[in-house]
Amino acid sequence: MDSIFDSSYYRLQSGLDFDDAQAVLHFQTQGDALGLDPNACFSTVWYKNRYPKWSRRGAQTAVEDFLRRSEKGEDRQPHPLIDPAFYRATYPDLADLGGRAALHFIALGDDEGRRPSAGFDTDFYQRCYLRPGQNGALRHYVTAGKALGHLPRPLPRNRAQSALAMRQAITALRTTGMRPILLVCHDAQAAGVPILTLDLARALRARSYAPIFLLGNAGPLTARFQELGPVFVQSEGWDTTGLAEGLPKGTRALINTGAAAGMAVPLAKFGLECLLLIHEMPDYLREQSFLQPLRAARDAGARLVASMPLMAKALEPEFGALNVVTPGIVLPPTPLAAFVQRRKSRGHGPVFIGAGYADRRKGFDRFIEAAEAIAGQSPRARFVWLGALDAWAQSLADAAKVRGLNLTLPGFVDDSLAWYRGADVYLLTSRQDPGPTTVIHAAAVGTPFVGYAADIGLIGLTEGIGQFLPVAQQANFAALALDMAAGVTAASRRRLRRLIRQKTDFARYVDTLDKLLTASLTTAAT
Image (cartoon, rainbow, N blue to C red; front, side, top):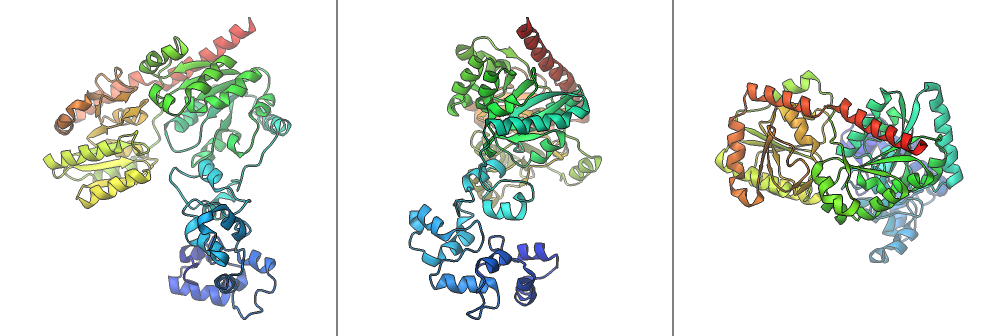
């Protein structure tokens, strides 16, 4: 049973503090009879109901019967969402597994991203709910997702059903006396645009708007969206035109990012007044094939707004002159204790930080190269990267640590300001980045940046905040970063904080967007 028993999961179910051996013994002597499961992918109660004669051959537990029969080549379903016949038929490389197909899924297939049955769509679940690179979709659904209301597969709703659901959501909001506004975002991952969408929603609520959210996919921040208003996730099966039909006449829609342009098209075609904010660099829009849906959204009536002057200039051949509204920022709330903790753990050498979803576009390889060059000149230097890493970036980080780099990887953190304040310099090594907001957050607590002059939206807007270096001068990057770190003082931090407050007023940003929407509605009415 060792091949299938998950002690951690069993302890979670039982609420008892067992070591591994005690957990197995408890399951064999009591847990099976109590209906506890040895693994998230094996349902004891369901198996016994599915196979009522499970104990006829002398098995003491349901999972023992499953293992015996699987080894003998008999198909047995360990869970209602695992179908051995479907699994073998779907994956030709597993066709010869016979009765061991379900065991293969439990041991390997779930982590490999394979689909266990027609009832569970792994690709959908990973894309819609999990973090980038996260595996174990069925395990996540059983242990967390089902309780959160996640779907095992899309549930298509037609236009009428979608319109009805939206009307019901609007009815519930009418008691607030606030005006509904639709906020559209591509997903709810812990990243810049979803966080900006949440900040916009809070600011709009303060202006008597009632936010309703349309997300392309869900993600780890979904619960935060749900705290602010009703949430519809398009990939779960909603009909976008139907959702638009269910909104009151005159409802405004704020589409936050070019990645959501495809959702803007049916909204604008139905007649909603749509303002589409483009936060991506033009080359990225081309690489991701977002230009066509942006054109379609514009042609349907959506108004396009670029968030940086460089973006607007580069997109002018595609869309003509665009309005530019540079985003303000809302600093994430960070308790004083977090700042104190980061200060205590700072050490004696200079600290350099980077942030974001670590992949090639974010230049994580350049970050590692710069860090090792800096460490070569300053052996006591420490390095931090905030945010998730893709598999490629993780392999680079692991190798750098083996080589001796003092690298800390806390992942996505809520107290990012404390980490930025605990650093001396932000290393901006992105190949392509529309902002990034993280640079501004670091500057807001007095931490300057050194960056490569690549395809970065902030170029031309950072006087007094940091310094860009041509990529061709990569050899000088480490020296510049160390010089900048040596020049950071309490006074320099105060000056930088004042400058950021002047440049990034979020209330002014929201007011400008509100005026653009209001002006377009007034124009439409006349």
